[in-house]
Image (cartoon, rainbow over all chains, first blue to last red):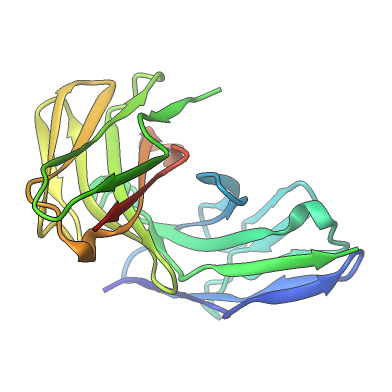
Length: 114
Length: 113
């Protein structure tokens, strides 16, 4: 079945460092891809999405490009802040399968130090 | 803003108790979902609902049931709670097929003793 694999954490960076969190997927169809973020004690918030190959999703300085040839959707940010400390989840969804359920990676915890 | 509200942030229950987790959304979304979140496993789908009184099993439905009597409310029921159901439970509703975006509640952390 469809699946998502993301790099293990925790990832610890200094403020203003460059961030990459790797995400790869396997899917039989043409899913949409998502990054969700979970701040401590909160639910998940959509960070960005891409619906087809070569689409780039971006939000709050984060970006990710849907790469069909490498089945990847890596999350990047040029300069992280302490407030970016959170758990990041990569996910995919086929909108016509099981109500569009999200299939998640295991999550990557990011800690940004001042 | 879409609001998905889960009735409890923290719950502590005893083994064998019947447990209800409630979720309400205010955007008239048709699809609603229940996931559980466990460290190292991400989120996994328990049940989902296409519309009122319609429900479908997800990937890990064993030990759970759901109820959707009104469009805005989707309840998760643990008929007889067990210690392996100690987890974080997250409810979500989806904004249509075209946008295919799910909005999540804050979660309920359930401990079964």
